[in-house]
Length: 211
Image (cartoon, rainbow, N blue to C red; front, side):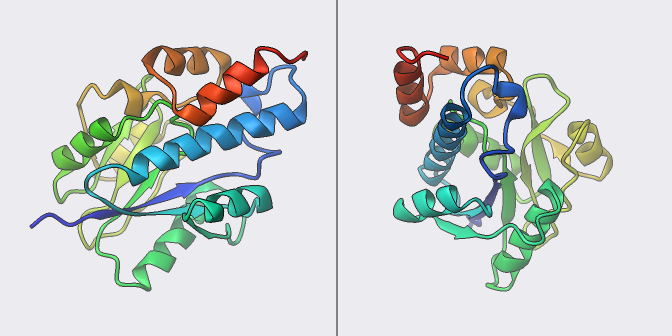
């Protein structure tokens, strides 16, 4: 019998997140975009077969409130020392509950399709494994082996770092799982794949607002 995975989704405070995507838009509009992208990512993950639970790791009060309103559990980013420590903290929370399979999903996948995430989980089987981004250098999904440690190595060159640490590379096409959004060009790419409803609504509203 397969073991469902509990996914950690770490998110920086809105005023710090996705600086390369900011452009010249007002800070409030940028925060709304980052929030929309994160919500669409989490919503797709929650609808994915094989995903047992999603735990958001953030200390941003607005995100904590909005995710809680959607029924998503949130734990604060402790000690607030970056992405890998945030994931290690979330992993400790899940381990204390006896969770057998843990993964990390980046929060910037607004076009994520549950069917593609599910296919990645099937291909991973019980192994520690990861999916690279569309450039092949970053990581969008990292899965611990069943009963094993996550050992996150996110940051520049994380795909190579995860491979060298023993994680198996997942090789499906999965354009929506690989389409992380860091820049305006990435957002256009995600739009071509098909955005989640919150990001799509943000774009529709932003089109009519002055910058």
